[in-house]
Image 1: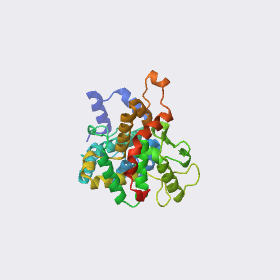
Image 2 (image 1 turned 135 degrees about the horizontal axis):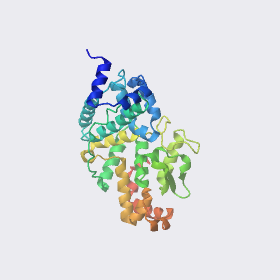
Image 3 (image 1 turned 60 degrees about the vertical axis):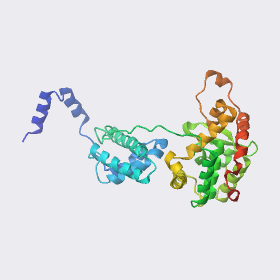
Image 4 (image 1 turned 45 degrees about the vertical axis):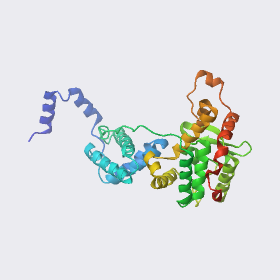
Length: 334
């Protein structure tokens, strides 16, 4: 049997390692003992920036469940590929997607997980790096028609455990073109009834003020108060038990929509489709420059810096669009 010395000599003779490599390994010492995946879960969550953690958390949990007692340095790329196959199968079984998005989410999370393991000295390589990243499908997102919007509102009104909250969210996003974070992070102090305005705080730490009808604002204030919000920094959108809105609620709403509307399942309709629809309507009514300001987009020319649309410009565009949409929510839910 070859001794360790014989193996090292053979590697040196073959040119696969150098004398400098041996010196470096001697200086660094042995690799740290590797924890199990379950033990590493809290560590990687702590190391992950909060915005990324919201995206990666589901797949972090998946890794901890799949390999709870396996050490970090034991899992191979082949095992991760096998896990990816099951993720794709689960997505296909739901019937809404080709599974590419679910796989991309897992690969991104796994790469961060094992990159952190390498950083902390628990592995020397990242087994998720050789994994194939599925190409993104070309998006077919467009503005929804009046009939399609009515279908979405009808399904949401007639399904779920809390149609009052769900319909209010639809109306809020339809008028404001807010991203999900705009609703989740909304506080009582962000509602300005005098101006008919709402302050949205969204990705990248940016905030923007957009118009909101008094009807939706009053319904939001009433729901917040009835569900325990009283201080200026209290969240507006809340569940019946008083807990603040979470991103998961949007999955629940649009899973129901896609389950009951084949056209919505085919398109993959989500809350972002309401943002797209509203910005299209604003652009058609008041021009692309107003729509860009309404959306909170910050890519501007030098001239644009000196001619930024005002809140009054946005309010005028809002008035042009939303008088025709007051009837989207059934009166019994107002």
